[in-house]
Structure formats: C-alpha cells, structure tokens
Length: 272
Image 1 (tube, one colour):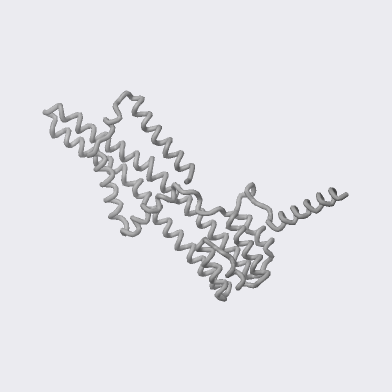
Image 2 (cartoon, helix red, strand yellow):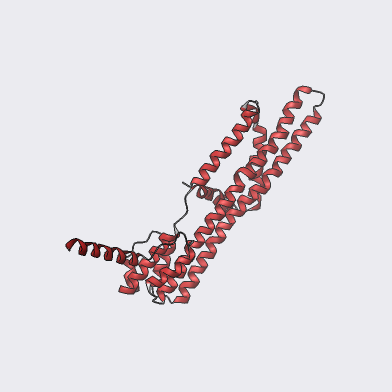
C-alpha cells in the first residue's frame, strides 16, 4: 500500500474531525443527508454525462491504484532487461524463451523478438502500446479532474436550494436553521470532495501514469539495444540515465567480479 496516500488520508480525516470537535459543535450536526445527496449524487450524474460509461467506470476502478505502491521499480526493470540482454547475447534470441517474465509489456517485447520481427516493427509496436496505455491513464485522470471541477458547483447548487427553501419559509423561524444547514453544508461537502479527495487522487494517478510510461520506455530502449547486439554492460549504463543518480546501481556482473576478487584475495591472505 502506498504510504503517502494512506498517511495523507489519515491526516485529512484527523484535520476535519479535529476542527469540528474543537468548535464545540457536535459531530452529528455536520452530517446532513440532503446535502450529501445533492453533492455526491449530483456530481456523479454530471460527470457521468460527460464521458462514456466504460471510461467513467474505468476511472473509478483505477482509484485503487492511488493506494498501491509503484507499479514497478525502474531499477528492477533495468536488471531484468540487462539479464535478458546477457541471455540473448550468449544463446541467441530464442534463448529468451527460457526467461520467466511477469510483466506483460516485457513479455510482449520478448515475444516480438523471439518471433523474428525486425527492429522497426518491434519499436513501432512498443511505442503504440506506450501511447495507448498513456491515453487510457490520462482519461482516468480527466474523469477525476471533472469531479474536482464539478463538486464545488454542485455545492453551490445545494446552497441555492437551501437559500430558496429558507426564503420561502421566512414566516416559520423553526425551518430557517434547517434550510441554512443544507445551504452551508453542501458548500462544505463540495469543497471537501473536490480539494480533499478527487483532486489529490487525480494528481496521484497522473504520477502513477508517469511511472508506467517510464518503465515501458526503459523496456523499449533496452530491447532496441538487445536487437543491435550491444554489450549488456553498455545497455545497463545507458538505461541508468532513467534513474536519479543517487539511486543508480553498479552493473551486477561488475559487482560479482569485485566480490569474487575480494574473496580470492582474502583466501590468499588466509593461506599465507
């Protein structure tokens, strides 16, 4: 689970609850079902009008991704691609069939290579997949941004409804407070839904989309160099440019060689 999303949600709940309790008002007084109905149902309905149903529900389904960790670590992706480069260089492209892969995008790149497609065909296929994936993710972000734009407006609609009800019943003082609560709480709910929930979720999904695009770009560029038969070490050094310099790892083969040389020198000293 993504720690940032979980901690942020907890802080939001604590801040709202703490603010209400510190005002010496009962918590139940901030719960108004007509206001919730106007804002939530009204916002869902308005946003649903703007998009195809499958796009709308896909966006709602993708909300869960905001509470998950990154789809993959770019460093691990680099290691997988470099290992596959090493296997293909020693045993040819067909030797990649023996490499177990869980990631669908890496699997697609590997299968295209094993099937004998040329470099241009593989590059075009992978670029198209990256573009379509980004478009789908961007559609989900747009839906959530529409929630952010619509919720305050529905809050204003609820406010006007409450004010109209209040003005129509000015002769009955008992109804004024109830009508005003609907008017004010709908504004509160609209702002909370937009700026406390859907807005941050849209930005988090946009971040997830960028992480997926980065991972797929690493695979695409790595396989382009595997096809050209480049040295795995050179491929590793090139792909490290995708990672911040503070997180970069040395090439695994170099690490093993250094470890072997250290163990050999240690053994020699012991034997002396």
